[in-house]
Image 1 (cartoon, rainbow, N blue to C red):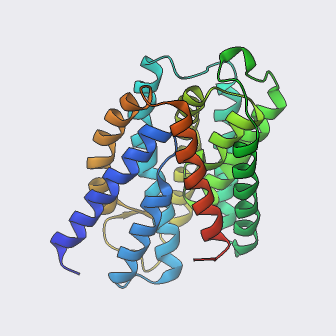
Image 2 (tube, rainbow, N blue to C red; image 1 turned 90 degrees about the vertical axis):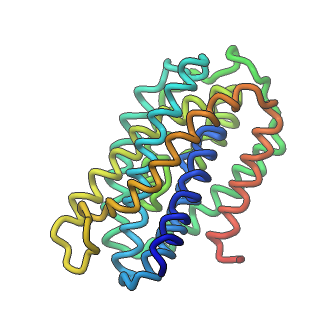
Length: 268
């Protein structure tokens, strides 16, 4: 593959990932992972290395991107801090476990479970109408703990930030206002992506056949080009998010989660 095309695809992928991160509070892994996987395969990297490398590098990009995005959401007053510790600590632990599992087992069964969760989340987001105000936020500590763990597992298993499950759960189950669910999800993803990232680096250390400029399973070249655009775009997108009607943001989440669920079922 021509190097210029390679770089352009990474820069464009970073823009798209950053847009999703800032605007919707998801890490953007559903964009970053497939792009990297395709590029690595085109470069001749074996499938058994290309897949975990795509996951790991996505998490590295997500970690850096979400720091900038979260700061913007925090400045806008869109991060709910009451149960953030539970979400972040359990998310970090779940991501470590998920990354370990993903490098040792066939995750197809887990993908089907996740796809089912996506479809159920979409149905709930369509049918359940919660008032979009702070007074309605759930005080269930167990609920926040379980959500953090689930999002972390997903993060480690599939190289995504976990926002794709966290946003529907925060809005439907824990009754967060849409804008604050996005901001709180962004903050939580910092922890989930870090947990998965550290684990992938350790598990990939000294693995034979890794491409040049690799840190464990993280491809440093792809990380640098993706991050160059994702961090810039995410900051602007987070600022735009607060000015967009909550119903529009909710509709965007429904479309994205439905797409991911159907894709993981293998329907297209």
